[in-house]
Image (tube, rainbow, N blue to C red; front, side):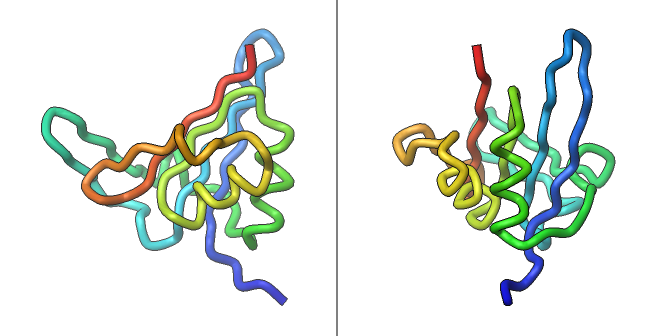
Length: 102
């Protein structure tokens, strides 16, 4: 059985869009910085349900918009087929990826 290691929060946004925010457990409440880039991994935005990587990937497959922070969360995006390895950036050494279905 897989360990629950990713927070996943689902947001219903206007126009029927489904936005999913996913982050590694240890990143909630942290501020990532690199050069002019800064990302606040807030509990308000990312602090949803604690899930396994498999469960998180299942939810990410339903997203029309997704934001993933941390190695585990980004792996979930790759497993879900919505993130390509070339589309991953790092902020403060932490992997970050976004997805938008047009």
